[in-house]
Amino acid sequence: MVNVSLHDALDSARDIAARVLTPEAAEHDKAARFSTTAVRELGSAGLLGLTLPRETGGLGLGPRAFAGVTAALAEADASAAMVYVMHVLGAATIAAASPNDRLRGVIADIAGGRHLTTLAFSEVGSRSHFWAPVSKAVNGNGAGVVISAKKSFVTSAGHADSYVVSALAPNAEGPTDSTLYLVPAKTAGLSVAGPWDGMGLRANASAPMTLQSCEVAPELQLTTDGAGFKTMLEVVLPLFNLGSAAVALGLCRACLTATASHLKTSKFEHLGVTLGEALPNLRAQLAQMQISTDSLAALVDDGIGHLEKPDDLTMLRVLEMKAAAGETAIAVTSMAMRTCGGAAFSRQTGVDRFFRDAHAGSVMAPTTDVLREFIGKALLGIPLF
Image (tube, rainbow, N blue to C red; front, side, top):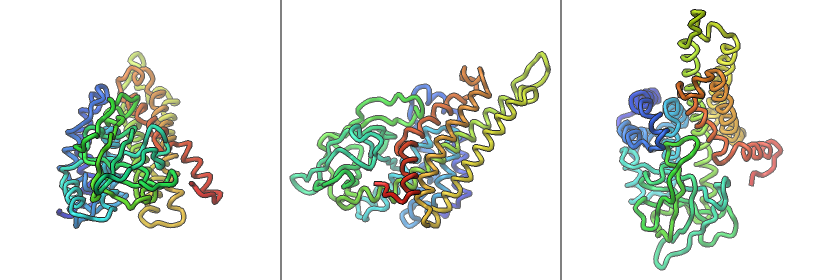
């Protein structure tokens, strides 16, 4: 793989956002249609292997590139951006596993843009506590395990080539004694349990999925028995919170652009002036949107710094990023709806899509309320679990 810089990766993401995502985003949202074109373009640009080591064929870039690419995609289509986030998380989890020939082949396919993966952690029984699966792997008659589970909110369900699945280890004694497995999409017993028809992020195919006596070979076990929880906290959670914050940042920036355009182009024709020229209250609301967006950008940048050079504050910053991002995205998109008024309400500006998509962040595990609880515990020195 030719060395690709952070700048190159961002340029590729912006090109895909402008050329592929923006023209199709509204229709994909309306029809709840997954964008296979977006995945293909991300793969062709090498972005599906963004964080994979260069020796595996990946780009070898870190959290700063991940956040930048994700935010650029989210400005055009937050659904596609979330598909990307969950893929990068899955790829990172696979790459962190002990290598074997089969996993090396999967990693090579991801780096080459030929394989889309995703996470399947959340379950109906444990709801937003994604780290505590209810399902339990059982030892098979031969090698490997058998898994039966009802997974919920599986991004890219029915479109991914593989799923990183959590289940309690065969000898688990508590709710965090989990193990992670890679389950290929063609595994017998794996099925999408129903269509995705959400209020927001409608084009990311975040549907429920059923595993019915799915046999998983030993070489597809990604963690040692009981070590899934550790991987969730140390590999998945930091990148997921950063990715979620980057999606929120992209939504805020998209709303700023749409709102400013509306204020500059819509007129009081009888007065001969634009809304922005005529109404200082709307200018003030636009200003507050900018301040909030820039504040979120600064928080994300600070969080990236702590991930690049971990210290005692890293986990706190990881928790804060997603909590603040979810609230900021709701506030900024709500202000955009108010500022654009009837044009936004009647879906003339695209702001309504950003508004709906923004609300997903606060209910996506770990939810904003759960994150506040974790932050409070961290500040008081109380164990999170």
